[in-house]
Amino acid sequence: MNDLGSAFSMAIGLIATADPAVAQIVLLSLRVSLTAVAVAALVGLPLGALLAVARFPGRGGVIVVLNALMGLPPVVAGLLIYLLLSRSGPLGSFGLLFTPTAMVIAQAVLIAPILAALTRGVLEGLWEEYAEQLRSFGAGPWRAVPTLLWDGRFLLLTVLLAGFGRAAAEVGAVMVVGGNIEGFTRVMTTAIALETSKGDLPLALALGMVLMAIVVTVNALAQGFRDAAARWAG
Amino acid sequence: MRAPDTILPLRAEGLGFTAGGVRILRDVSLIIEAGAPTIVIGANGAGKSVLLRLLHGLLAPTEGRVAWAGLAARRQAMVFQRPVLLRRSVLANAVYPLHLAGVARTEREARARDALALVGLGDLADRPARRLSGGEQQRLALARAAALHPEVLFLDEPCASLDPTATKAVEEIVLALAARGTKIVMTTHDLGQARRLAGEVVFVHRGRVAEHAPAPHFFAEPATPEAAAFLRGELVW
Image (cartoon, rainbow over all chains, first blue to last red; front, top):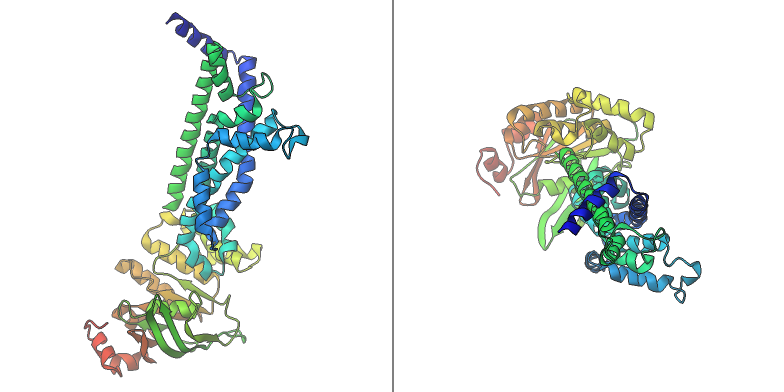
């Protein structure tokens, strides 16, 4: 009981004093996950837009695979990247394993399918609504893509936030390819997972609270964007 | 006034359209000339909307062909029963098709604002388009089409879901555009509206063009019993 209480007050102290070790871990987490979202968005958004407007044989299969990949377990994504980046792997010569870059790659692989699948869903509905009118204006599917991306902008921001939330909260992928090396690849989730068992409860609790605050903020922002989308949709 | 490279007359030659094994339209041959509005009337499901979409080029005919006198791609526009407005401001909606049509950036806004003024939406330019009332949305759809300065404007039941006040506003805009030299081709199932607007009438019955005649002639002495029954307000289909 007492232990727990003192751990709590120490955790709050760590946050209140912006403890350098905590700050470093939080900042690395944000850097890795935000970069991963940016990289995944470069692939996921255009791919989702393409799937929304293009009609080709096998499209249904691609969508099923994409939706299935939304549930890709983070440790499996981590394992795949581990195999690629390990010394004997095809990309081993770059020496990226157990670096923040490897963590970015693993998280990007994890969330790119999520961004693509959610983007397809958002833009496909928009395209069904717009298609005839845009064709009347002389715009086919390809010309429509920038229009759809812009008109779906608020919903696409919620898609990016969903990707960020998933990346910031996952532990498996960054653990496998990052290794939780103190001061180098230790992020919030891996620190919580490993420091708890080592008895560093204040650090784990402090990071847990920061993580919760981030998750709440992300959801509040997403709600704001959904409201904005509804306003413009009339 | 009209440019020498006019796209009219518009010719439909043996036009037919079959979808899902159902023959929606058949043997449609007509010539639409410049001049007063051409109003396409007929019962719901007679094939009016499909005819308009074939003429506008949104649907490819399964039989026959649509032939314009000139290059028609950019010289025609269409307004739909339910306007599809972009999730943007009123002004941005009017600018958008001009952008697609390759109108110079400097010219777009002025043309869009002219068109908004024409339909009485000049003061609402900065509003989100989809927050407008139903009547205002349809007027914006008309402004968007008018800004393109089309030679031919197709309208598919533009007043079907509007109240009488909004309908009157739309009819006035249609007549103003016609007076400016825009060829109007419009479907309606509202006989009163057809009488108010028509220069000539195309009567569609069960997927065929049953009559194509000047309006006074058509309303005074319809040539077919189906048209006569339709004019008497009987249910024909």
